Image (cartoon, rainbow, N blue to C red; front, side, top):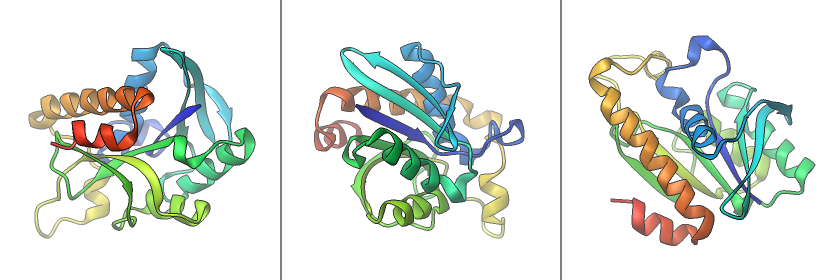
Length: 186
């Protein structure tokens, strides 16, 4: 089973914020694949389905960003899921809006959701799709920035980035992650 975890914060107040692009990607995949992500399990919302013969789980942690690892660990324990089959999708300040970067290991880079996953799994080795949100203007508080909505001027790049993320994840269902990285890391 492949499982995709989109990081974000629960609640309508955070819905369109930069920090919630992981949720946006999971919602887009759910729509694309006809999966309802409504089952409450492992401190998250979960949806299961079958995509081209591959069993898939879509997960949105409901713990708030800095405790995302609790949902990941809970899912692993409950479903006896292998971390190698996971893809974690989240926002990245060091990638510009509209671009995605795929990696299979690395530090948290200061991202609290990834930091929590590393703490709860005991490893930095897991597949990830980093969705670009760019850095704020100098002097702007980073916490305020990531919890702000995307401006209208970035909506086309945001939509394209969500589509690229979905395409990359769909490709990764049938292909090794290294091959997926080679194809989608432009």
